[in-house]
Amino acid sequence: MVEGVVLAAGESKRTSPDCKLAFKFGEWTLLEESIAGMRPYCKRIFVVTGAHDETINRVLNGYTYVTLVHNPAYAGGMFTSAKAGLRHTLADGVFILPGDCPFAVPEVYEALLAAQGRVVIPTCYGRDGHPVLLRREAIDVLLRGGKWHTLREFIATKTAMRIAVDCPGILKDIDTLDMYLQEVRHMDTLEGRRCWR
Image (cartoon, rainbow, N blue to C red; front, side, top):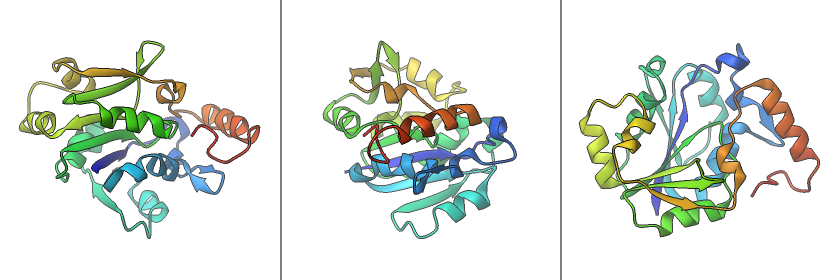
């Protein structure tokens, strides 16, 4: 078993004043869907909060396997939240997932876990997606600090293992209200609330 870090500290500027992670997806919220995808593979999940701290706390109230980590430096970007979450992890491997990316099917998580790389990234159509799996050696290097400003920059300095998966959902996130409404309409046309899994 590994651990997970879900990034939920952003300001949701393009859906302001609403927090997009609290938007409903069927019975659940977008954030809950993202957590549910990795839950079968993680003994603990750390959700990093920031701009919408109160909303995220309310959404996740009662989730015993979720630990909330507040990032006071969230305005500095997603990388600050990734580091804030990773500092709390102890497992040999950690999934990192933005909270607005709930579309990875179980086979994606299983393929990443089966790989032996220190940094493992799923790809589809030749493009990198989410989640990313970091092994402890890479996490320790990241937390010791460096000149990286983003997780992408950090990964670029490492020999990442890329695993091709048959899941276009790894390339999708929800940034705007229109994108959210489009995904809800798509979901409603198929049987099952989590149709992408």
